[in-house]
Length: 166
Image (cartoon, rainbow, N blue to C red; front, side, top):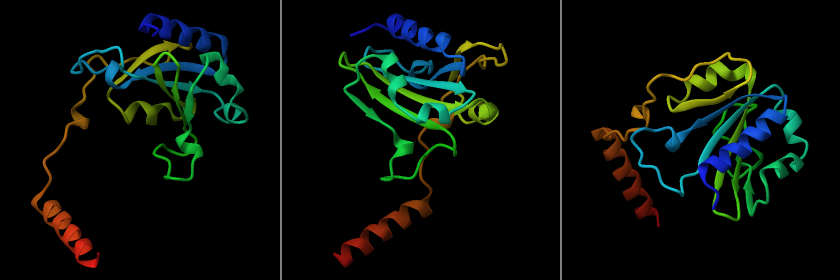
């Protein structure tokens, strides 16, 4: 299994060689100070790019990441509606050595929306020096909240109603 330095070296080469990529960020558990680091953590990476559509015409550009044993493109699937705003596109990639990279392409024009939607973002490369990483990342927005009494009652009602129908 590649170590994190090897993965970040590969990502740096990819970003440096592609003029469409203006910013690369890391988010998720690798940024969260409250998460114990382990070798199986995935890499949640975002490229802020000048032209998302140019990546979508062919997956050939993914060869730069190396051999993949699995690729999923949630925004390209019809099974579930996309989670991201229109124009954002993600690739969930699994590699033979166990490394998993979740890569999201975001139009540079959506950078404000992107940085506002997640407090666990660390800027890794900013070719134009436009952005700053927040000083203290926080995971508070992801904390589990106790359900309201009304929500518990509604769930119980739905469960019982469905059981009655079966």
